Length: 248
Image 1 (cartoon, helix red, strand yellow):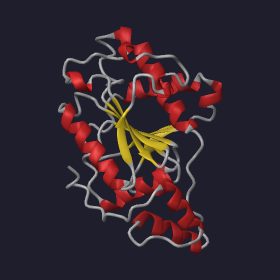
Image 2 (spheres, helix red, strand yellow):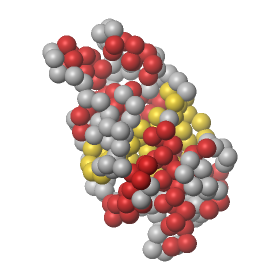
Image 3 (cartoon, rainbow, N blue to C red):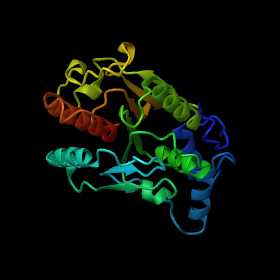
Image 4 (cartoon, helix red, strand yellow):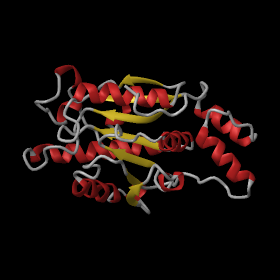
């Protein structure tokens, strides 16, 4: 499924190994983005650090990459209401062609990454993750209607991007459902386009013991005007996801 993202396969390495190598200036040859950061550091220009607060939308070639941006702004405003979580909350666009642009935000969101085909952009996303950043991908049935293919494609891409990683479906009692607000999966949208075995499913991608990405079948941005009864739970669950990512 990752035939469109032809970045070179790096050696099996975890985030901890990445930081050990970066600190020792011994960078694995296959990690394109890491090598670039090390060269910048050697030249006296420190590599960018991931910001402590903020939500970024990933810029992609998809014609609807910014779909539902009005709802995203509402979610960010909702996060800002939590003073301990939303202080200095930056909200904007992150360009994967530029590592520094990605690192402006500790939390990056997209509906779909399949149109990113440049190996350098994938290398920047990998390095962003290794520096502590988090990717959140929430399926939208308008943007990506084949939900099963969406899940398989993104989980394949991400685990190939991070070869020592693994993915697993999160249980209904996972802490991500109660980090800030107690939410039951049954409170989240029930979408007719979603296969029963994928309904409301959340898949975590783990590198070492850290969840570095979340692939969601819960469609948390979808159907707000048609089904307003879901909106409060959707917003609260997105706050939970953001808070969990920042705490781990």
